[in-house]
Length: 578
Image (cartoon, rainbow, N blue to C red):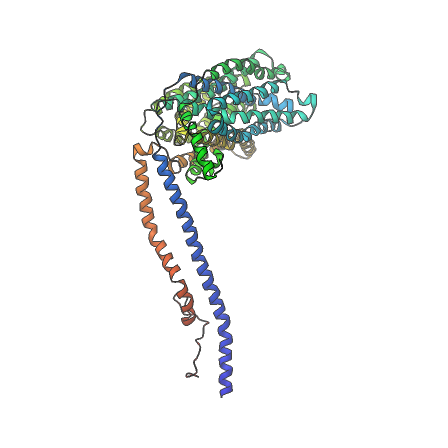
């Protein structure tokens, strides 16, 4: 009998050991999970705390009182933008001729996409140029000298591009040189537009920033206008064969005549007093850094290591996505779409339409820039314009199917009007986001603007051309009443970016005007409410964590981990029961 009882006890103990080990493993997993949740929650709380402190500092920054609406600062930005964007836009407008001269052995589709691929190479360099010129403008030589360097940097490759031998002369090395020169242009443009924004708006009074920023934007569009005018004249004065042979080089040579005038204007410009005041503190700050043995970090690192500034930077990229893509869609790709891809009109007529639309857009930009100064919040006009752009691009493609000049012009004009509402006050909005620290403003504006231009502007011609051929292939298998929607496929991409921009400007970005309109207080109230609603769930986790040890030990006694009796657990028998 005693032997039988001992065997039963040994059998029960052998059954209990695996169960106990399994339960111990489960308890360990539970404890680790709760600890991981608490650690992640603690990290998020720490990040939110840092974010909140930086946000408070952002809202409490001293307003720039040095604005005096200096005319030479504005002229410097205007002249530089016209020059830089003329050189930059000429390549896009001559994409067909460049494709046939540097990629002659490819099909027409591959030639055009290869040409746009080289166009994209310049945009890849723009963020690098933004970091380079941002560091120069913020920490080293100031806004004025950074602009001067960018002008010199773009002049050399533009002239060389007009002298570059084609594929027929030097073979496959010609496209390589073309890419290198184009990348040098992109490096320069990466600093020019942002530099003109910052210099002009820092010298502006607070009630005139939107208008002066719109003048800078209008001047960059003016560079497109000049490029469109010159290419139209060249195509009008020479026959198609001559243009394809050598006359496409003339617009590149023309840029050399503008350089001396531009140098004179920039040389007369005063440095930004707002930045100069900050630069005057450098000597004191350097003494403190030397005393504390701290190294000087680049401006870009100061932005990326700050949670608040990092959110601002990526929010700006999202907001600018639809503006940059729409700009290149309307003024660069649409003329090629109407002439080369659809064959609705000639290249000369398409360039003439673009010329008229650009002139209209410049006028609308100035009006909308002035109007943006009248709104309580800088973002109000932008928020009105974004839904309009979302619908305007598909409407434009629908009007193209009228196959009439009037339809082409009206379609582009309504799109340009909607886009001007977004871009009118955008330059002032971008600079004001970084005015809390003038030692970072050049870099912040330049990097955010050029990242958006590279990701969404530089890729636009390539993506739009791909979507065109994709939709063109689908047209063969559909009925006539469905053709319109398929032809509008490239426009839906722009509409999707418009939704992204609207989300970012409404939920991601913080702006100094939030204080005056009450948005900051409203946001705090909503955050407090969400925090109170989530407090209960975190209290439960804290309770589980504090009681996890007791839960682990007691589970072996009663066989319960979640309130249910274990079906495999057999309680041990004591000697009395035996």
